[in-house]
Length: 160
Image (tube, rainbow, N blue to C red):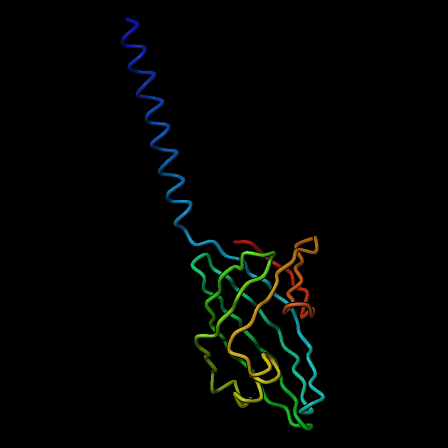
């Protein structure tokens, strides 16, 4: 009788361990996302241009990032529509909250996008293909996104 209880108890414990391990494996392999939304207004006095846009930054657990930009660039009084997605690979740096972003692809939607690529890349990225950015929580679902020491934007996030 004691052996049957012992065997049943051992079987239940093993079953729970297998279920727990399966849960952890499935949980760890599923993509997790960080999505941050904001409105931006950047001005460049150097080339007399400005961008006003709604942006969304999506980071996935497989080191891919997508920046979605929808708005208007104004240069010398002329408005250009912007509707672009920029794809990055990113990695987390060992110190602090810095991430390294490298641009890998850019999509523009020609029917809704009239901004020249050079103008867009200059005002958004300073013509850089890669950069470091910190993502620092500021409370209430807000995050400050900064390139090295200069603050860029504060955005609202959703974890999915």
